[in-house]
Length: 120
Figure 1 (cartoon, rainbow, N blue to C red):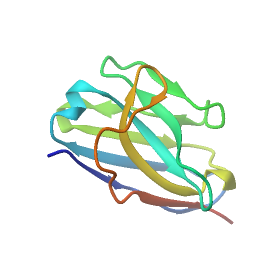
Figure 2 (figure 1 turned 135 degrees about the vertical axis):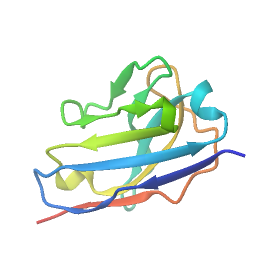
Figure 3 (figure 1 turned 45 degrees about the vertical axis):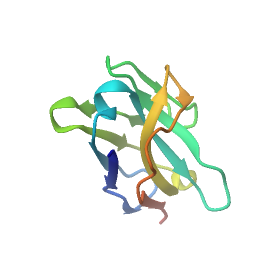
């Protein structure tokens, strides 16, 4: 059974950096594109970054140029490198599968997520 375990969140000042990790167990990592979603308080969950199994990366306009999404296939891990963070990046971050280049397509049960708070 697939399991997603996110970590690396915390409190960071505006302009700072943070790296999130998501360890994926099960077969989905080698089959699907992976992505990072985030949910701010009172908002719907949104997709912010994706990476296909071939390494093609795509980003929401709100994070383009600031976030990157590397993956380590040997470790079944996908990362979200967050640079120059802004208060509007605050939220709970989750990983899950995606489809195509930038399509919401979660196929696994959601993990617990990791909280990111950007505040001075």
